[in-house]
Image 1 (cartoon, one colour):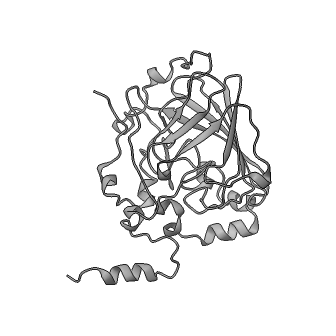
Image 2 (cartoon, one colour):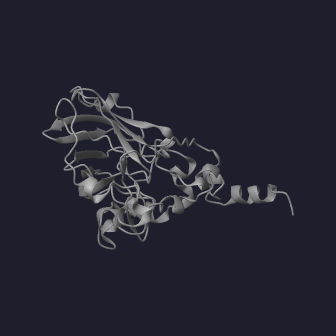
Image 3 (tube, helix red, strand yellow):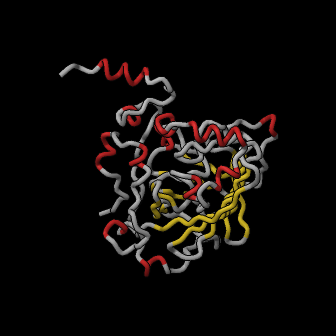
Length: 295
């Protein structure tokens, strides 16, 4: 019988708040507890890197990018809840790296207005708190796709591996996941992405970005159980300098696969949790309460 990466039953009712959703990872980095049984065992993790017929590392997964938990929730494979925590910065360090407008906007944003609450994509480099999987053909020139189990509107990233360049700025269509081109440098998959829109938040605290954002992701699989991401984030419209950090994904145990979870804009996902995005006045929430039947 095939085993699956299980989403808690409460998700079926779409009633979790984003703060709870961001905290699904266990509260310890120890893989020995029952809550960590979905990860590959230490013996499995130490096995050699699997490879495709053409000799390139097989990055398939599925991978857990939220295997560590901090005071703001889970992280590990990238920023999710708090940019400062997830990039392992010192308290207050992020503010020193943000342009004044970005710093002010980050501190003024409210959780209920996060686009992800309305089931819009998280974008890059933010990591989904659920499983991630690479769809990787056996040839190094075939396009690679990155899938997420939950959220991101059920969409995917396409990485062009055929040697093309990014479109000229005048022809670039800015999207949630941008325009990604990839190449192999030895055993490292390098993904270069531009053309992001500015609609998503980089983390749950509201860290913004502009359409100038440029990311370079370098993925290396040193063994069966680890996928290392060396990330460079450059957005001169938002940050005073490029930011670099190395993250680690953990392999899930053999037999686990992704489950389908479809989240569409403006469905009951955020509303059932008490969130109405884009309403600073609270009038929509009041109208909803007034419309409820009186007990």
